[in-house]
Length: 187
Image (tube, rainbow, N blue to C red):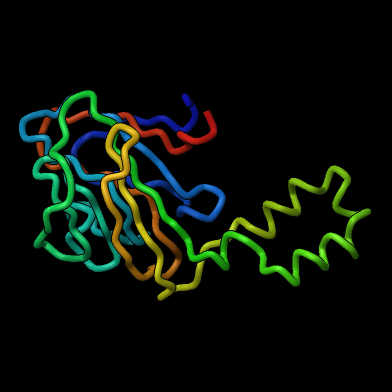
């Protein structure tokens, strides 16, 4: 998808809105690994420090291209996946707890029976969006997963920070270039 595409220079780039149940995944393509390929893809809270790689500080998690390690709120990473290079597409997303993604059964029955007339009209999309586009409360445990070239690399459980997790890309060495796609699933 061409929507939401942006180029980034050295430092930290973060989206304006957090991931949510309806928009839960994003990708970046490494256009140029630069001098050291110190590129990281991950999630962080809104006020994350601009010159800290995502994953190093509390309230963040990231997959680092230069060493293939995952960092979860710590400057010490652990072995995770392959190192990444030019042309690779790294992805990051959240698997939300089930209760945020599907209404529970009794509710669903009530919707089917009572609200049928109201739901069949044009309001349907809006209703669904309002009902299901949710950011879980601070402290809720979610699974953050990473992909490389469309293949699942792994996942880690982490608590949601206040205000949610924002897609965050870090680049520490010069001449690194990435292309970010915030809506890879919508084409």
